[in-house]
Amino acid sequence: MNNIIEVKNLSFAYDSDEPDKKALENVSLSIREGEFVGIVGHNGSGKSTLAKMFNGLLLPTQGDVFVMGMNTKDEDSLIDVRRTVGMVFQNPDNQMVATIVEEDVAFGVENLGVEQSKIRGVVEDALRAVDMFEFKGQKPHQLSGGQKQRIAIAGIIAMKPKCIVFDESTAMLDPVGRSEVLSQMHKLNKEDGVTIIFITHYMEELIDADRIIIMNDGSYYKEGTPVEIFSDTDELKKLRLNVPETVELADGLRKAGMNISHNVLTKEDLVEAICQLK
Amino acid sequence: MSEMTIGQYYPADSFVHKLDPRTKIMLTLLYILFIFMVKSVVGYAVAFLFLVMAIMFSKIPVKYIIKGLKPVAFIVTLTIVINILWTKGGNLLFSIGFIKVYAEGVVVAAKMGVRLMLLVSTTSIMTLSTSTIDLTDGMEMLMRKVPFLKNSAHDISMMMSIALRFIPTLQEETDRIMKAQKSRGADFDSGNIVQKAKAMLPILVPLFVSAFQRAGELAMAMEARCYRGGEGRTKMKVLKYTKRDAVAYVIGFLFFAVMVGSGYIGLPF
Image (cartoon, rainbow over all chains, first blue to last red; front, top):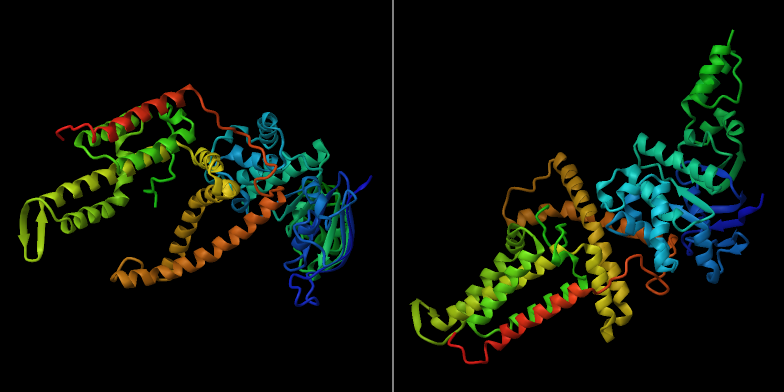
């Protein structure tokens, strides 16, 4: 698989007067096309700063970020970078531009200068993809948090990006909204082959990810499959990351001498594993 | 908070609703312009008739229009009082101390009051019958025709639509902050005007802080969605004039002609 995003020796300081106060330090990593990658880290680990590097919202102080071979520092290709890598933010209220749902979904498509006759079809397809078609004439502030976030996702898919970055997009939602958004991400990833980068601090949301990257104090810490990452719960706690309840329980049982595999991540797996115990 | 009429759309299926927003904006502007050129009582009657017709063809309940007049009631009253007291001419009707009221003053004040009320009511019909998106789209298209506004037409309409978009969000926020401050013992309801104004400070400061934060985030989200101003941008909905608009323009101009013209043909009123 090709790399869709490549980060090379990236360092970044928010304040150019204090170049030593780095939000990111010498980060190198790559995201493959079609992957579902989770990026985790505690508050201030630089994960959101890193997310904003992926589509040129922030530019590296040192090092480079390449999106499909295009350098994000190159102003001429900035629009192409942003239509390749879409982004859904944390607060659903603060990313809605228009007063009507369908107008908001159309916003990005209009910015790209898509022919007028084609816009409506694209917008309606995007709304259907997130199961929000019947809400197209509504006002955003009448919708629930999860619904608003799905509208934001529709606004991004209408632009047909190859990759979507979710910057803590579930953090402000209730459990129902969170699972709506999460299943939407997986659907996009599986059915349409969209690369998903999910920045979060809820570890349990990454159980089904292909790969998890851990950030710590502005640096790349380590990466692995969920099974690999969750196998060392003590290390996760040391990094101030919350361990999913089931993983923690499985770990406790293991420490108490029970034979439970490290592959156990979900509640169903755990029930199965416990039933198998003799 | 829910009493605000301007920028509040009253959905209905009517002739006025279906008009192109540009037509509505232009006719409203012209109406405002011509109402200040009306000289005769007949002219005022015709202007009033225009308003009645507009209300009838918009299917907007009269109570909404009256509600829209409430916020300007103070200004109208003030204008009437000032005109009564300051205009001198005609017969002296009565005087109390230094206050002298002349017949001319009463007439001028009445005209001014009627003008203002007609003006506000007509504007209300426009805003009630046009969704905010159509309104800002219409303004953008019209501003493009004005030489010195041409280049900033898109920016102005984008700013207006974002402002309108955030009104309900900021209302919710104000509500939340007020409750939070009340739960800490803040008192917004008692005391004189100065004390009440001071009590607003703990609401306004957090409100502004959060508004700036929201603005920053929104700007970033817009950039992430490839926004780069009006250049190279297309629109999903494009405004189109129809026969209906031609009819509205013709009727409008007929009314305006009679409104202004009636003052020059030597009518007794």
